[in-house]
Image 1 (spheres, rainbow, N blue to C red):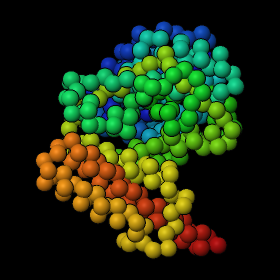
Image 2 (cartoon, rainbow, N blue to C red):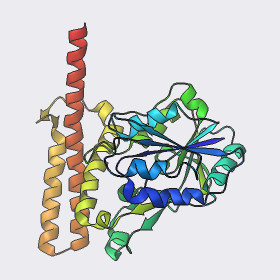
Image 3 (cartoon, rainbow, N blue to C red):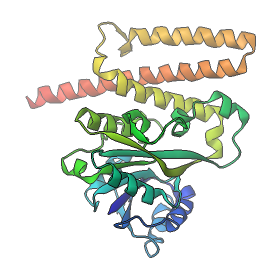
Length: 318
């Protein structure tokens, strides 16, 4: 049996369409159930979700602690079956999605982690500059078209379409609640952190090329201001995932390693050069990098505060 898990917060705009798509799913061998965890919604999310309980094998739970990963950890206590599939409240499954995930899990018994394909579902036609200038994976959570069926790396498995064998959670693994969506400002990469951690413990990952979903990309998410804001969250996540363990600087400015401010200065110079030469595409790309490094600085400060708080708590308790 498969358990599908969705965490939502104020997802009323997309939930009805998403749940309608679930009504069109082909049932996988062994059956399936759906758990939706409401992470403190203040819109019509609960009303929409519970209205589908007669049409879908759906159970509703409420988690008051803020954060997507806190909501996912709540759901884990209620999963049934041998495979847990995770997705989002703005992701539309294609009819054969769970059938394909089931088949891959059955054919690859030595693999514990599975990632499927995430395609775009544009609310309005995407302008040319987005298709040409923007890194679609980092910005919109879309998987690379270069992926093929077979063994894969943890960084190719995205939260909108991933499956984990239930025994992984029975052995005590959980999502890290300090990373991932929590309001407007957060460090991206919570699923990547989770999958990387599992791979470090010897679990292996498989890409399922025919398990397809569509990520709904809203009209406002195609605005430059939103995309550049995404660069900050992406940078925060990349810093936490890739540099945090080795980031105890001997020299720091304002709570962050000094070299990060040098990178910001270098990016500022590059941006000014692009402005003077009227190179629109290059200027946008350099602005993305500038905000990316801003994310590094924000997360470095955040980690410093976390460590300071942890050290203070340890001292007091000691």
